[in-house]
Image (cartoon, rainbow, N blue to C red; front, side):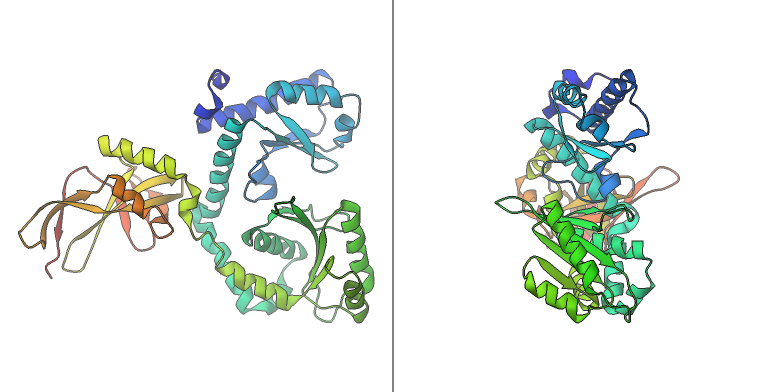
Length: 399
C-alpha cells in the first residue's frame, strides 16, 4: 500500500481514499488484537450497511463488535480508543449496541469522502439499470396495491425503506428482529437540528386490524429514543382505540395504512434523481473541458442519427462505473459546408459555451457496455455513443 498520507487530503485520488479507509481499519484492528479484544469484530461500509445516500458528514467506516461495543465505549478502554482515532484524525459515535461510526471533521477529507461515497451510492442505483427497477417497483404497487399483501414482512420493510430514501430522508433500516419495536429510523434535515422519526411496519392481512397495544408500544419506544415523531405503517387498518390514542398525542404519532403507501409509491415513481448535473461539481466539469479541448481522448463520445440524413451527436463522459455513466451532451462546431449549410463537416464544441448544457436536460444517464474486443459504448435511451476518433464528422441534412 502506497503511503497516501504524505499527500494533502485535497489531492487524494479514489485509490488514496480506499487506502485511507484500509489504514484506519488496520490501525483499529491492530490496537484491538494487542489488547486481546478482537473477537467477532469487523468493519462495514455505510452504503453496504444502510444502502442509502451518504450525509453531508459521511460515515468513513463502521466498526462492529458482535459481543457489544460497550466493552470499549463504556469501559476503561474508551479513552484509549478515542485517543487512537484522534491521532489518526477521526472520532466515533456509537450507533447501537454493536456498532460505532467513524467520522472526520477535516474539511478536505470531508469533501473527498463525501464525493467518493456519494458517487458509490449513485452507482448502486445505476448498476445494471437498478434505478429504473426501483421506479418500476414503485409503479407496480401504486397500480396494484393488493400485491402489498404478497410481500414477506421483511420485503415490506425494505420497500418502505426505499420509499423513504426516495422521499429525501436519511433512512436506517433495522435488523428485522430484536429491533426493540422500531423497524426504521428517518432523519429529516432541519435548520435547528435533524428531526428523527421512528417507524414500525406491520404487513398484515386486511382483516387483521391493529389494536391499541402495538401503537402505544411504538409511542413509548419513540419517547425512549428521544424521537420527535413516530409513524406506524400497516397494510391493514386500525381499531378505534388506536385512532383515539393517536388523536390524544396529536402531531407526535401518525397512523398510515395501505392508501398512504400507495400515495407514497406514486410520489416515489417520479422521485428518481431528476437533475443529474447535481451529481458532479461544476468546477470539475469545467476543468475537464479545458483538458479535453487541448488533448481530446476517449471521454469525448460520438453518435450519429437520422433517416436518409446524417446528424452527429457529441457528449463527454463526466462520471462512469463498470455498468453506467453520466454524459454531458455538448454542441457541434461546423468546420465546412456546401454553401447552404446542408452538407459539411463538424467536430464537438469544446469551449465555455458548452457549460450551458450542464443542467437537468444536458446531463443524462447512460448504460455502459464493453464488447469482447474491449470497445466501450454508451446508450442513453435514445442515442448510441462510442469514443470519438478525433476526426471531423460528415453531416448531411438533405433528405
